[in-house]
Length: 117
Image (cartoon, rainbow, N blue to C red; front, side, top):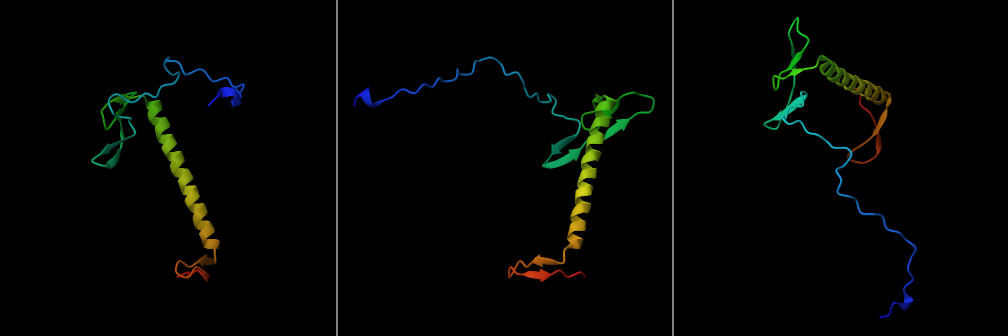
């Protein structure tokens, strides 16, 4: 075979990535506790926070580490917001289901009236 039939394309290839460290790194907790939950024997155990009256720190029930109260407040606020949004979705779904009068039968595939017993 000859190279007479080959036409070179005007394509420049990118430079290979350098061996520099990445700009962003994901860091893992070194002690294994994220102060939110822990998996023990295949079950999720949620952390509780112990507050001592007169002190400015909160203690994690999983690892007994003293935590910043703003971290705990932010964590609890996030969980409450997620719970509230899930509740709103549930209420909306139940409202939509109450408004339905017919549904598709699993057995025959036809539309049938919904029993309201």
